Length: 469
Length: 100
Image (cartoon, rainbow over all chains, first blue to last red; front, side, top):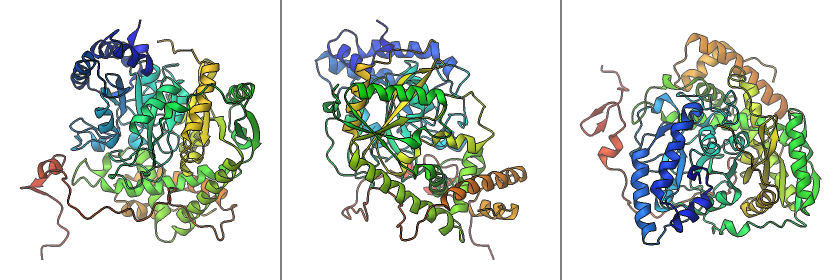
């Protein structure tokens, strides 16, 4: 048995029944890292010493048949934009190259209490700004399915680590698709929860009204198990919502008979590659075969979503990144990479006197219309499905000189963030030997419906392919 | 919006954003900002938004307050641990007033 290849659930069962120890599992994952990391470059920092201490603690508990949660003793990767007390956190930026956080993010504290073993901090686009992980100031992560291609972004390190079995699961963050799109590109499961479901305290802020932390996992069930641990109200984040957290594993049912699935025609329009559309349409047909009712819907405002996003997001980025003044922490502002500078400039321009009404405010109003359109749609359907990314994983370097082309990679994921909805990407097949992701979106707080549909699909039509490494 | 963004405007925005940019960056961003803004506004101007309220965030939460009670926070040394320049137990900043 290759321990590093286990799912979270399998790993936990093995630990609990003492087939192997957390130390053995952790060593297996680090052995895998030593083989694959030179090819993939998923990590900015490996925390082997921390991991072995955490594994030892987990083994003490497991030795007396105790656990703290279904995560106890299982090795995980953390996106390097989630602050970890005493452990360097860079947001993949030179400006934070020597930043040692004096506190931990709420999600990380929750994972620690749940018995996590941290493998390391994963690569990302600088301050999570990008769709390919090429904007990292440190390294370019490669897609495990094809090392000449990008893993997606911005959580590309987390998705590549999970896909290459260099972590059993990972945390990412999603502002305009940064969990779902790399999950799609790497053939793994990625969930962006409802805005307010998971605390953002200690998530280095990119665009505060859009950012949300979520799991990247090998299976749908694993995503439910992780969400159970990280969800919930946090007094430290006044945008987290005080709402009961259900047991998300209770929604994992293989039946979807009669469920109403909306298929927006705009999600298969211009810009969506034929091979992606074909693979996703096949997957949707399979959902129909399982007894779901397909309903064609129209979301005309999603056409403008990318324009709304590329005004609102940079505006919030410019405000959030104003804190990097080189006084309290971090280096001087010339250390920002070029995409960060571009977004700060765009945002500052959109918010500046004389342009605020025409740009930011106009975008915020169209955002309202987009939000209302989704609300109308969810009166008719339980979930909305379509492709996660309009294209297959692209070649490294292919889009870096053309920001507009890079921005269009987010076209199908940003509407979900603008409306604050939950969305998941699950692998639904291969095209040209590259993974294709099916995106499932539901109304606010309806992660349960997403889990139901995703689990039913996965159990009936398992995606068993693995990258050859 | 067919209006092109000028070099002078970009320089002004860079100073508002406190971003030290090189002349070649200013030139590059002048082109790219124009391109992205034009793409965005061409789409958005077609949408009627009279009587539509703007959305800043989606949860609807307003004025989230907590009881005004002191809670433990960072120690002075923790708060100062990432600064490049300090003076005794303080952050050191540039003077904002002239000497005379």
